Structures are given as C-alpha cells and as structure tokens.
Length: 97
Image 1 (tube, rainbow, N blue to C red):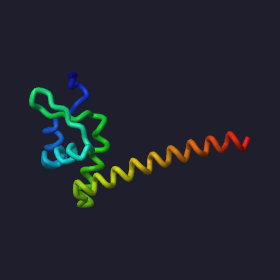
Image 2 (image 1 turned 90 degrees about the vertical axis):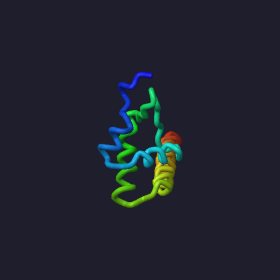
Image 3 (image 1 turned 45 degrees about the horizontal axis):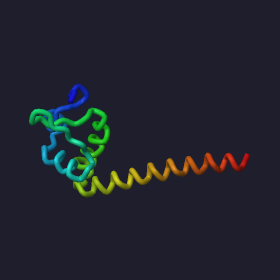
Image 4 (image 1 turned 120 degrees about the horizontal axis):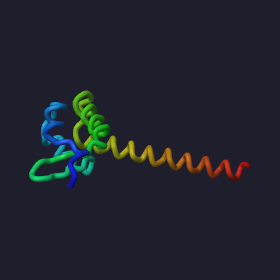
C-alpha cells in the first residue's frame, strides 16, 4: 500500500493533543478508518476535515464519543434528505414546464 496520502496517527495525536484511544474509539464506531502498515497506524488525508470537526466537538463542546456518533449520523441523514429534496424539486420543474 502506498502511504503517500496517509498521515501517521501518532502525528495527529501530537498535533491535536488528543489521546490515541480517541481515534481508536472513533474507529470502533465506524466514524474513522485506520490503516495499519508495518505496525504503524495511518489515516487518509481526506479524513482530516471530519476528524477536525470531531476533535472540536469533543474538546470545545465536551461531547463524548457516542454523542459524536449521533451528531455525524444525523448530519449524514440531513445531507441525504437535502439531496433528495433537490432531486424532487428538479423532477417537479420538469412537470411544471
């Protein structure tokens, strides 16, 4: 596996000042995918935006891991509903014209 687009988990732990168990717990809930190469854990760089949101919720709002899971599931449902609404509006425009 090419680790060019991956960030070592230890780097994130040091940079964001969170414990390694925080990332492990997120991974157990399916909120984060951790890749292990030669006994080093990595996270894909595309996940950084979501990780930063999770860390801010945890540190600034004092939301626990389960709460973060609930919030992200609700955000995913909102996104799906918004996409569905756009599709319905587009189909409605077809019938109106």
